[in-house]
Image 1: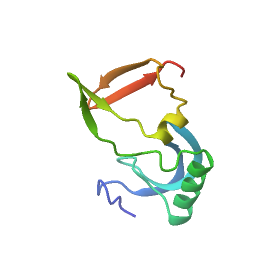
Image 2: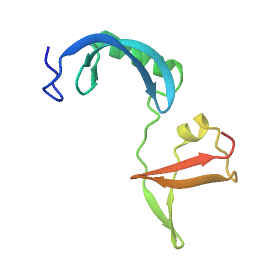
Image 3: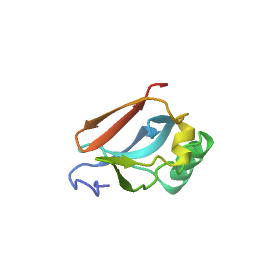
Image 4: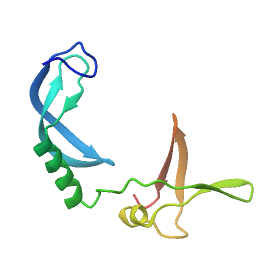
Length: 110
């Protein structure tokens, strides 16, 4: 079958290593493009990936938040679920830096 993404490669059966939010979920069967390396999973495999993410407590951690002003700076609220997952506590220090078009916040306790 031709790859629906690049329309050049042919899909072949293989295995993918799946991660979510930097947490390894395991290896799963997939159809992988020989040209662009894009992978596609069937419904059963997608549900297995979801189950693994739920078991590790990371399903649904992605959240939207508002950027607010505080003095001359901008502030971002960290949702409770993410703070709990990363064991963030009020008053702890973190290192913040840009990475291309993203903001990386690295808590000192990690």
